[in-house]
Amino acid sequence: MEAARAQLAGTPPDMANALAAASQPQLSAVPSPDEKGFFYEDSPNIFGRVSRTIAHVANIAINQPHLNSPAMPEGVVVTDGRGAVKISTRFLVTEPRPETGIDPKTASNDVLHPGLSEFGDFGSALRLHVAHAERHPERRVITNPTAGVSHGGKLLSGRELMGRCPEKTARFNLRLLRHVTQDGPIRLMGVSLGSYIATHMAEQNVGADEAKQLNIEGLALIASAVVALHVDDHENFRDPDIDEHQHRAYLTKSFLMHIPWDLARMTRKHPLDTSACVPIIAAYASAPHKLRPRLQAIHADFKSVQNGAEWSMLKHIAPELTIGILGGEFDPLIVEQIPQWDALGSLYPGQVTQRILPDFGHLMTIDARRSAAELDKI
Image 1 (cartoon, one colour):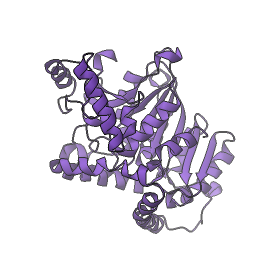
Image 2: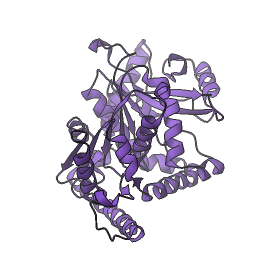
Image 3: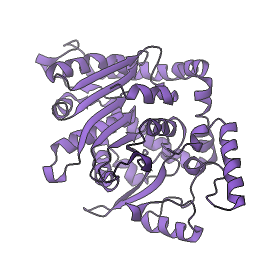
Image 4: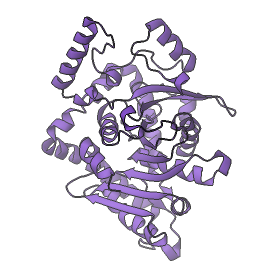
């Protein structure tokens, strides 16, 4: 892992560029502001101290105080050459704090997968990462940014986008994840689309040969988008005569109508939290050449989520892993899922926990600190 660490602060620019290029040519070798804070300079001299002070003040002034946190992640570029396809990605990793005395080799790992249009290295996903890491300095907190979308990650080619599907994404994620989690237990976490990817990862890991399995012990789904499909007749918790196609079309329409309403409501009730996510807009605007492949990736992922999750897949996971669901009462996807998780919990007692928060909708992670606190309760 140390060999792959893209810890560029304090590293001579030429060396940093060479390391990044050798590991993953598509990734920028320059740390973007979300990684180390604006105007960041890791230098022991007076100029370095002044730069850090300026960065600290600037981050507060622009309502990005999380950028000053010691829990801010570092970029870690990982490459896996096994199999027919060589793959690589850039994780965002916060290691356990040394003062906790935790051995990094055996530390617990919480692995966060962001939502559909979230960068992972900007906005609410980064704020949730930092808030969770601050609450758990004894754990390694990892964000796996969405391929083809995140600010610092590579763009996907047309060929890669054509073959994009959650099963393939999950398989690649599992291959790469083992390079950063070391020997500690793992809890997969996902927000919205990320919950769908994390669920597929859990199912593939449960079904893998024991020698190839990662030490995954739990699954936490935030603003979950995992809606069951093809429920067995004798376990059906919905209208037995339901038209699956029409029902999913209605659910999609309800969700798309909910998002602007929920954004307006969160802006009114949590103005500072909402404004802290504004850099996402600037990041999209600053790279117009990336807009088309990003939208193509988002569209492909959205279509995958619309297809739903096989009920048999959820039953495959539940006996092996604890599943926690955190959602808001206004979220139409959560309202749809409450009966399915109740049904799954009755089949596998003690394995499924739901926590539905009043006065929240699908965009609940805009309030990152509240979401991190509630995450500890599932």
